[in-house]
Length: 50
Image 1 (cartoon, rainbow, N blue to C red):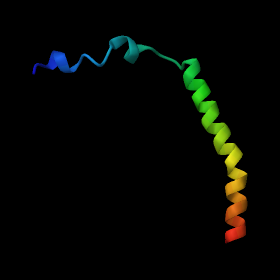
Image 2: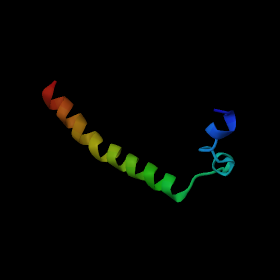
Image 3: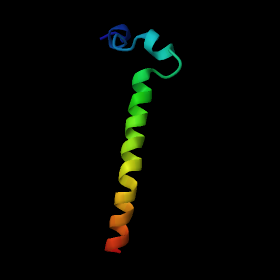
């Protein structure tokens, strides 16, 4: 198998595109909202168990 056939999955347009997309920002906001929502619950649980 030559090296050209293995590089088909990588498109240069995707690699060189700078910045964040709306999907990236929504994903990050979703993850942080879950973390910040569960942090007090986890802290309370740790204080009650310890």
